[in-house]
Length: 206
Length: 66
Image (cartoon, rainbow over all chains, first blue to last red; front, side):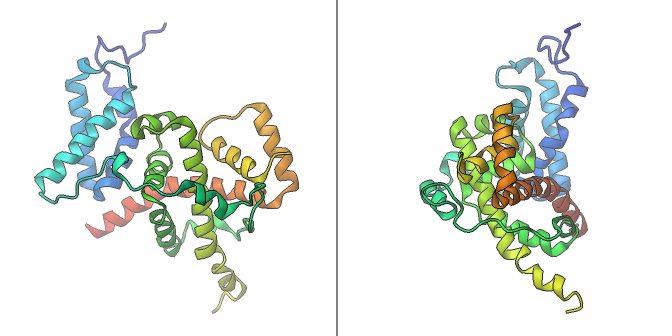
């Protein structure tokens, strides 16, 4: 019983395509910043995939193929709206000095410069609007390539190997990039939110 | 003994793939003794969670606007 529905000759089943909808939607939403536009782009993508499923060769993986179609739909949208906010290819994004990054956090022997402190009730932060504004700022402060890799993995929800396909990063580079992204985000949240909110907690009526 | 840099790199990898038993043990032993890396471990899991919710938040915010 190994009759997988992804069998290319039989075409892709609707079911299989729909499984990828949430990831496609998040991808589209982060680019288009509009719920209904994102919805439309995903619908069009799934429809196009359905109609051309015979072209799917199964080499790159279904999701990578779908994202390829989605990117075209998003580009079409920008073209129609003449807003020339072309989305740069990953290679065109400005790189950052990755070696300097390491020194920001660790000594040459690999010990913390200044350590992560304990955070007070992070769960509660998730319920606060102000926290999300800070979170967004911290995310936007990541260098462009790092931000993109983090976005594809943590916001869109692609697997590591899919992110590598999407960006052309090597495996090793991927791990280093994600490690640094997490170090940076963590530090930013600590400085801007968790250290600051201590005073609020000590004096809840302030 | 592995450095904090190496351990946090492993912790980070653990959020993106499954680690070997040896790697998981190295982390457990280290964080038992190192509160900084223990904090990093908890907080990177928290960030993972927050990032996941971020798109929901964004969706809600955009909904209100329209």
